[in-house]
Length: 113
Image 1: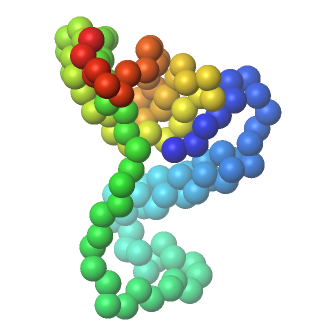
Image 2: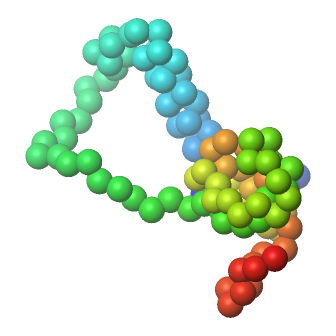
């Protein structure tokens, strides 16, 4: 997750991550079009030997949603997809799926409405 300043100057880390995600999306589109990785990769790729599939923790938001386009209801408890961006004043967040307006943060001791 990256914090961003609303209306602030461009941030080099945000620019770099945006470029990286654009490259990923372009590769996904090529794979969708049936292009094999051997035809996509132009440079020498590193070899990963003796590998296993692992899991990492990724930040998400958990809270009470109102007005979600697919998770209908008011104050419905949800967990979002991975959070990619959050405004430094904690009023906006961009997950993998969509933007969220952020209301009050939960108190750690009481997560009820």
